[in-house]
Image (tube, rainbow, N blue to C red; front, side, top):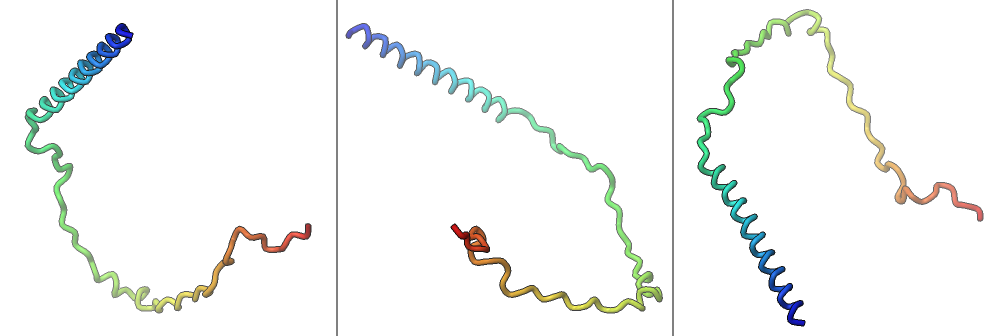
Length: 94
C-alpha cells in the first residue's frame, strides 16, 4: 500500500511540474507579444479618395419624363399554409 501512495505522490508532483512549465511558456509568449514594438500605421491607403460629382441633368431627358408611377404591389393572402404542416392533407384509410 505504501508503494501505491508513493506513486500517487509522484504523479501529482509530475502534474504540478508540467502545469508550471505550461504556465511559464504561456507567460513568456504573452510577455513577448506585450512588449513587442508595433509599427505606427499597419495599413496604408491604396488610392487617394476622389470626389464624386453626380450629373442630375440626365434626369431631365424626355425618356425619363415619360415614365409612370409603378403599380400598387399585390396583396398577400391573410392565411398561408396549414396549422400543422406535418399532418397529412388526406386522412389515411387504414
